[in-house]
Length: 194
Ligand code: SAM
Image (tube, rainbow, N blue to C red):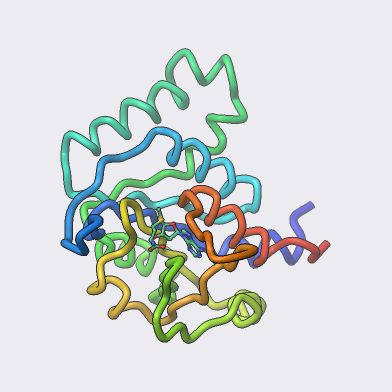
């Protein structure tokens, strides 16, 4: 039977931005979609019960690639081979822009989600992980925004409602794959509630 945790998680969506993100020189670019990110983030999203996994790319060839991967697992051979994967990949929605994703969620929820950006090097963060847990507890619809390449463009960070404090490792090395960062943050949000 669905419990409070399921209700809270249903208020949370994850976005993975491929444009605008920055390259190693800090220039805004569009990155390529990685099949691993699609699978692994969709599986984390499904495991923690989040509402949707929204992939942002304005590149039509990249959108076609995402569609091919999803089709294989949702209606193609993969759907019979591994129904669990179908469940996870069914959470994926594709948008040209982050604004389009926010608009789609606003239409579904009836109110704009609060946006939360993430980075390993977040200057001026204004939200702790404990604060994020509190936001979810009061049922605020949230869109957790993750980057690719060398991270989210400054314009995306500046426009967000909240800048989440980075996950800290042990020591100065801090280079998590985005799919690892998503799993850690979802676990901090939802683990230990039951
Ligand atoms: N230095 C870049 C940064 O964190 O923005 C590296 C980008 S990393 C390859 C891709 C994405 O993973 C980031 O945009 C962020 O969403 C997420 N990420 C990686 N490490 C993180 C950390 N320590 N804390 C929070 N998010 C992290």
